[in-house]
Image (cartoon, rainbow, N blue to C red; front, top):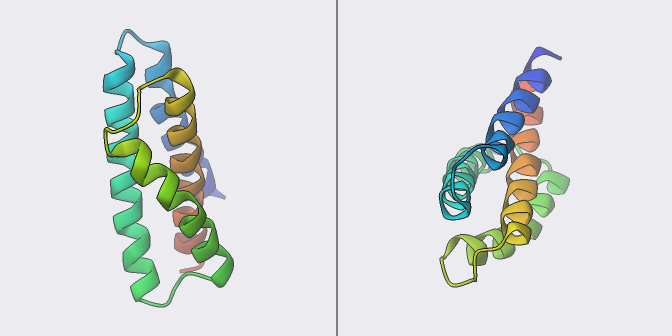
Length: 102
C-alpha cells in the first residue's frame, strides 16, 4: 500500500508541473524524461522475467505513441502533454505493481 501511495505521489508531482509557470515545452520534456526512466526500469523487469503478459501488453500499447510524442516531431500541445502524462502514470503504476510483488 505504501508503494502505491508513493507511485501516486510521483504521478502527482509529474502532473503538478502543469499548474506551474513552466512552459509547455519544458513540461513535455519532463514528462518524456519520466517516460524514458520508466521504460528503462520496465525493460529491466522484463529482462528479469518479472512482468506479466498483461503488463507487457500495456507497456507495448503505450510505447509507439510515447516514442512518437517524445521524438520532437509532433506539434507540442496541451493534449499531447496530457497524453504523455497519462502514459507515464500508467507505466509508473506498472513499475509499482512489480515492486510490490518483491
